[in-house]
Amino acid sequence: MFDVILFVVFFYFLLQGIFVFVRIKKNNEVREEIGDLIAKAQEELKKVLVVRVEKHGEMFYLYNQTSNEFICQGKDLQEVRKAYLLRYPNKRALVDDGKDLLFKEKSHV
Image (cartoon, rainbow, N blue to C red; front, side, top):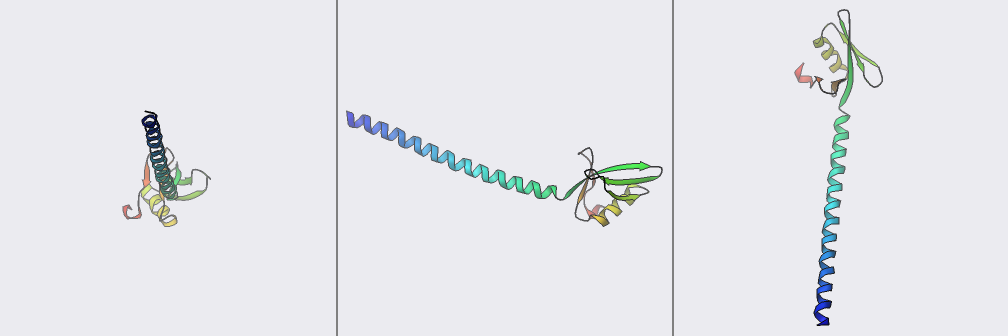
C-alpha cells in the first residue's frame, strides 16, 4: 500500500514538473516573439517623421513636430509633398494629430 501511495505522489510531482517546464518554455517563446515585435516596431518608427503643417498667407510650411526644425514649404500641399520627398525620400510624414498620413511613398507624388 505504501508503494502505491509513494508511486502516486512521485507521479503527481513528475506531472507538475513537466507542466512547469512546458509553461517556462512557452513563456520564453512569447518573450522572444514580443522582443521581435518591439524590434520591428522600432524599425518602422525610424521611417516616420511627425510633422506640423502651418499655413501663412498662400504658403504652407512644414516643421518637424519634435524639434520644430523647418523642413520645407510650398504654395500647395502637392509642392510641399515634392519638397519633403526630396529631403526625406525614405521617410513617411505623419501629420501631428497622429492619424493622417500626409505622404505615403514617393510613388504617390
